[in-house]
Image: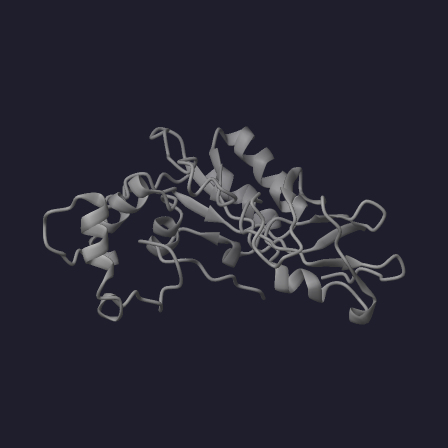
Length: 246
């Protein structure tokens, strides 16, 4: 089973990666001069995860029963860590609160659908039981779109990072339909054979389950976004290249 890694719950980047300020002695003096900061550098680490304030989760047994018809237990998560990771995005106001243990806006449940059918069934169950769904990722994590505004209803975070299929490739227009959780390195392994890949011409676009994302040929991440992670496509198959099923 594929399990994608999350970024730090309190910041950007991998959990095991830390910024070593001692290796960049000129950074703080530069920041003070440019920003007009008068105070000396202060170390303000995030609070321990055990100290983060989470509201008691709202539970809807009818909704959960419907989910379990199509989803496994490992796709339905209510742990403290999962709720915290999906509580806020990565904007300044989000990280300010997360690092200080203020996570009252955390969802009650986190779901990891693995195909379109599970997404559809989740939305139907949510509509039937008056449950609020918040898509996680795809720019929503820096635009304030993860903010919980309803404290009465059950709120669910829908994380589609496990959806990674290359659905279709149009070699005529140089576009592809790719599920929302795919990463560039994985996408290119779905195209076969490798020696028949032709360069992607610009302008082109990648269509991700209804969302349009510009694709670049220079290896950088695309400026657009999907519902879980950014994709940078550098190539598409030639007309004689089949697309592998994931």
